[in-house]
Image (cartoon, rainbow, N blue to C red; front, top):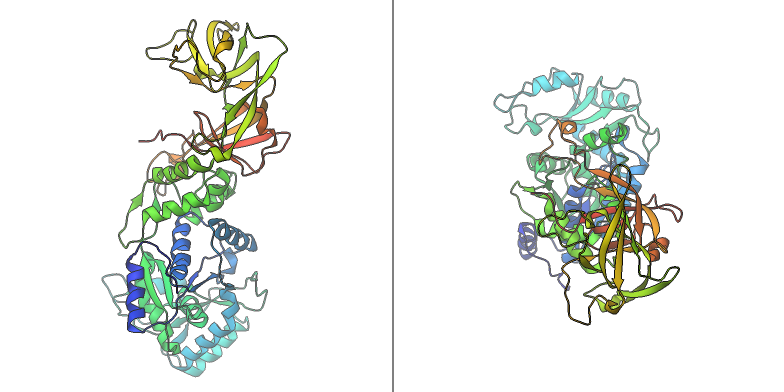
Length: 547
């Protein structure tokens, strides 16, 4: 078996110890999301850990949809989860559903009842919580805890037959109401829910709880390592108890790692769903969201996300990762892979008064300064051009090296031009610049050796393409939005520019195409883009403006 060379971590150390001791001879993992929302950047860490662990040891990793709560789940989410995993570059061995094991899980519940290890309880949800006790006080036994095996079997079968309304009864494991671990104080393992399921239809009106279905699904599948985030560490005794009671000979080993916490964002599915439903964002794939679909739509490459997860690393220590690291990973990948182009986001017209009227020429420019293999392209040059409004000041400040009356600059790949004047409207806004060009400086260098300090990007008015550009930024303006997240929305998280001008070669841009626009940042074509109305998203600026 050829070992995949990946950095070691404590999970691999545990597995190496088990392999050396003969505890396991094969490796099988699984990624088990609940299909009740879209995956986010935190799930990317779990995906990478699950799939890369199996890959490293020549094992397999399954995708298993934890669909035990039909009231919150939907096929839409199943399909989105599958798309996200494929986008990240991973391939599951099998796509499975917890619901496929419902018959088996139900039989396990019957087995627990017959062993005297489970009972039907009539306490309400609030009463169960009250009886459970606290972290410092033990719980109290339910008054229904000592029902006979026969009565429990009868009641559970009647629950299954639909005789009782939602919430009227539950099936609880009989463990220890005085346990210091609250999860072991007779947890609920089945509840009544008269809700159709997206996989099983109306077959069931009782559904297993996560803490019961999850270990049984793992064991039934042959999972050797259940890798999960640290909040499940206190659930591990219950995980092991369930598997032990059912009698599996080769139980999976649960190993926990610290979840990914990213600042300036919200990953709670409840909060994300609320933002979607209230129209605060345009959908689960809004490019300001840190859902994987939102990140993908914004233009982040999958490699950047995987690099980010690798840099974060695997540990048990709680930490909050800075959003800037994710942006830096995007810049690193796009800096190497994104072809260069010119786009003027806030256009200001320039007239070259000494350039022949009605004539145009082509300028050959490289697609990437560090990768000649990416080739060159031709852009049109003409008498009328567009530059950025910010590239002109009528009264320049100190160390301003761009256009102002009397100053000379270089137009990228083209000529030196000198500003000779400008026009304004009635409100005093500059509407047009007048310049002259030096025909001896084609290519951007002067034969006489004179130097200029400013180099500007530009597009030709004769061959430019109008576009809508959406400038995205972080959705929140504080590191920890908390429960009061709505009070911390960043009003600059989306700025829409309607009348941008692109170089002519971008008129055939397709959804997902990425570019570095000179001096602007990295951009990609949005799914809303059409040949008649091009829409581009800013993925990330060239440099971070956040401190």
